[in-house]
Length: 171
Image (tube, rainbow, N blue to C red; front, side):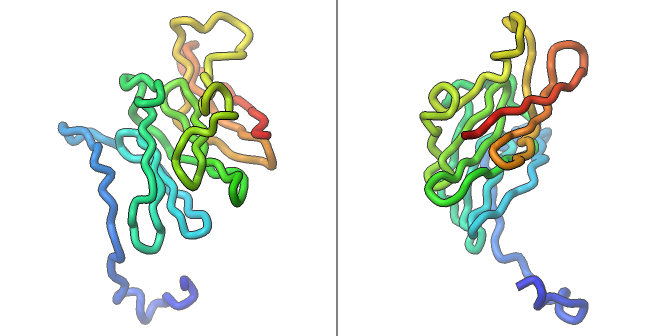
């Protein structure tokens, strides 16, 4: 427990485990700007290639991995991502994160898309903006913040570097 660590013993701490996401760019220009989230002993995060994953927080053993490109995200839109947010509890716990123009909802236990969320487990962030967005860039690199049953997330839109906030009800 954290309370057991103090100035007298901190120098004896040792690495318990490491995890290599395995998808860093070959040219050494990958970035991971993710703050991992730990809930009930499970660490949720994203890799350099924007794959979401869950690890046993005590051992580092991978529980699942999700590839957004296999679920329709454009590989060219992949890049910087600042992580995930976890919503719900028990059997209804969801891992939410964005890759390119999509917000994905994953079952926290299995890493599979939640079929009842958006269209087949994803929401196109270009939809519902009140105008034609064909050919425009709308994306989010932030996991957002959950307040009760609302997800509030910033977006980067095509109009220069203008930022907008998107609020979605999660129930």
